[in-house]
Length: 401
Image (cartoon, rainbow, N blue to C red; front, top):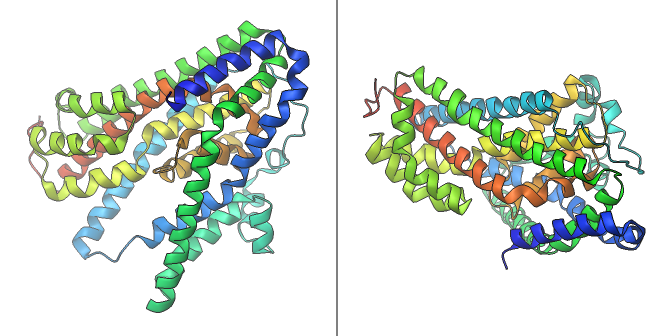
């Protein structure tokens, strides 16, 4: 049985047991705590190795390719930012988690009360590197990883080769450990969900909140796909609807497989043969986009984290919500290649902003359907950026107005 079906069954079973057998929850809760501790253990190595590896893999391209790369990266950043802000607006407008409050007995991390520009800047440089790693202080870990990746290209060839092999080995070990931990997710989700449902007095209100969460993500994804991206395409004097029809095959493939990587061949074929974009642009922008451009993931993670805060009755300031947007962008970019990335990267974001990790149990059970939707949005965002880059390079396309 596929893992997502196992998780769905675990979610239903946990909800049923938590509602019908609340007295049994204390005897099961330790399993959920163990699972969340395992995920929390992976936060620092995932952040550190993914950022260092990504920066270290950037070579020194020629001037033409450097210009194309900067332009493509800027477009991808803009579209992901628009997606994340759309998710932020939708979750605040619809308030999917506002109808139910789950009691949380554990103390909320002090990060929520201390999140300010001054505190974040002060935390960027830790007094002790090893303390930052041991305490899961993600903000200084991110800075250390960036500095390590940048400095790696400036040391001797012998030293650079040795460090790169060490980093690569660390990344492979981290991915193997992540895969093993994710394999136990049905058991962990069962225990977590049982605890969540036993802590609320209104079962149907919680179910309604989860359904509203799905609707919120879905509406946000549709708004990004059918409003903002077409509007950006119109700025480059192309026909958005014609482009959308030309991309029907890769979009259907992305929706059915929930994999951007599996869609890559059909996406490349569609943008080159249907839209008429040159291979010079497509063979750089599309593979890069499948690795770093995650419009749907950025929107989803932003909505999910704020939804969890709403369910726990935690008020978030504007600054804290913008911090979630930035964290969503960072995690969306770093999520490529991570097993069950939505679960793992959401743990990273919750840790960054100091929200209860147990809230993952409220959203991961309905993730399969949303995963299909956001993958299609990710792929469509890649193709839209390819069009905009091609037009900025002066290319004539078959979808020109």
